[in-house]
Image 1: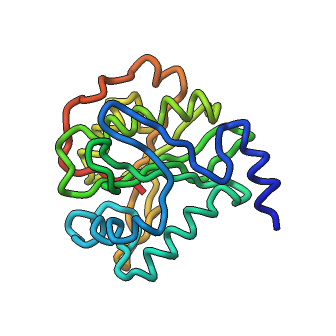
Image 2: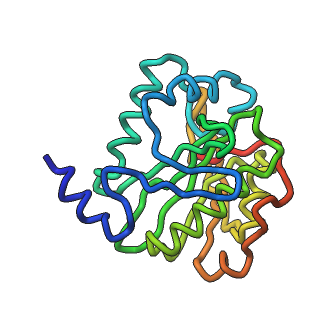
Image 3: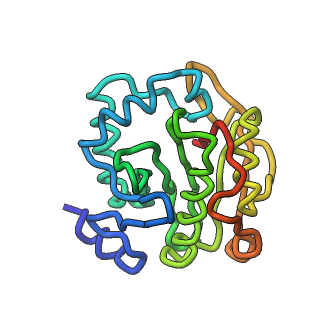
Length: 213
């Protein structure tokens, strides 16, 4: 019963019941649906490839459906979550996800997160998706700051954030918990003006492994 007021309150930022589509030269960012469940399970089926995900992998169709349902209702949370499927424009089908958690519409900050299927890494797709997502967030969501949380050993993800202007601001001890234990996380931050100054080409240097919580 509270969904419609929340949807109306977010229309200013282009978010209602339907997640807006964001196109790039090679990719399309779109809403996540139940049709994506097989691709989501494939995304999570290699523990070694998803070790920096920041959460335990999804193993069953029921877990994947619960994830889709949560994403579908995330915009209705008091502090909204908004997440997109990433797909290639020349071959539709989910190859990853990206989006924002803890979107504070008053303080105008949010935490970015992303994941990419291991078969599609090393091609610059995440650089392209992240650049488009950041452009949209600063222009349409009117964000002043974007945060990211990354495991210290996830060097490729640290580098992709730094290419887009993020600065490492410190270490949070035992701030993450997955695979049955706590993990330290690095805090990265990006201000709107810093992104404009550091924006990278759509097909910047590719990285093999990219996930942040």
